[in-house]
View 1 (cartoon, rainbow, N blue to C red):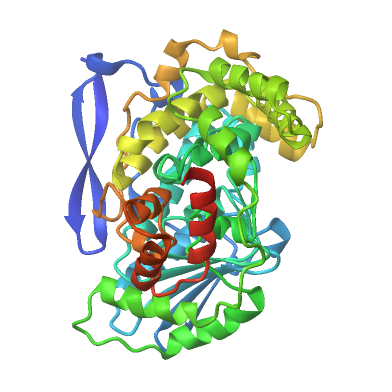
View 2 (view 1 turned 135 degrees about the vertical axis):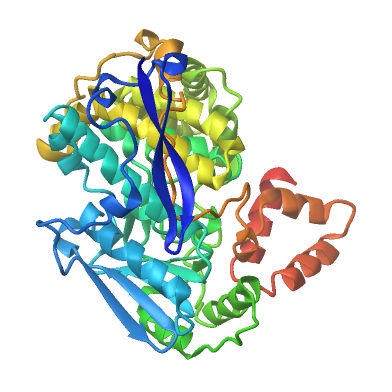
Length: 484
């Protein structure tokens, strides 16, 4: 009888490990062909963490300063792109610090001009061309990366990410789920996966659908960038400070002392107040996407749109009917952007943004692992990485299928079939970010606060609740002008 290998999680002193169980296969014979070989399961965590011969001993630098434990990504020539060697070092350190009474705050940062520009996808594309073993190696990388991201998302101690510089793809996974995310004037945030025939991963299924209005779907489909203070206004970052203050802030965090009885939320309140000591003003009094453009994005990129063709039609209507030359130019640009993307990637991403809002943080990484594994056996990822990142071609890659109309719903549904069951290191889980209170309030909270109250009363109440947080007054003003 045919068998399928399934992963069950069992507790161990270091977290969650895996044991293998067998069950009939006939119920779901939908896995890609490469799975039917000697490897039919997600590789156990302890095997993924074993050092490899080509691991660089200096690609991550760890330092201790009183209660602060710092992680510095140290591949500046590669823009600190994340690889397996780095993840194999970071995971055990985080596990060690979680058990240490001396470690109070974790800080992660990057060397050079990037925080982390993404994952080392060029290596993955080369592995995928080697057949089943190479594709499994790529899947092992994603399994390791997602385990790390989930560990960060559910970490038991305060974790502060300095998003100073390029923060894309894998770098987003190292930062976006942290309670404290600090943007600077150098921050450049994007999820560019559809450009290379992939999908926004590293937990994007969780954080992008939870962004306000149509911003999440817009960023997911177009790979548009958020620069500097915009990352703060849109909730990607919880704070905005000048890059010259980061070293001082890290030193100040090292001075903090917490009683043993103090819980995580109480510690986070102290850290939040400490970070606010270093704010020096905002570079703009409103986000770059505001007013009419933001209203259009919320309408055009609503997850209620039935399909990608409806989004294209909406953009064409904006282009034809808007009286603003800038809006017309924007619509033309976005239409061209969507046409240049992998049709499969765009349509998978649209479905991902619809269903991801209901996933828990643990389910997010498990489902994304299934999606990533399916992409690894397809054509577009290798084609996109090779054309865009290796050969640096400017023309449209040879996507297959080549158009949106050629992609069927059956093909898209294959990406969302539960298959492997990625075992995670942490057993933590939640449906909403427990630390959402640290950033600026959401639009709905602002509108609720102003309902039935004078502007002065509502403004005063919000300023008191958020302790006069930098950017609060500016965001309230923009929201009321647009929606009030």
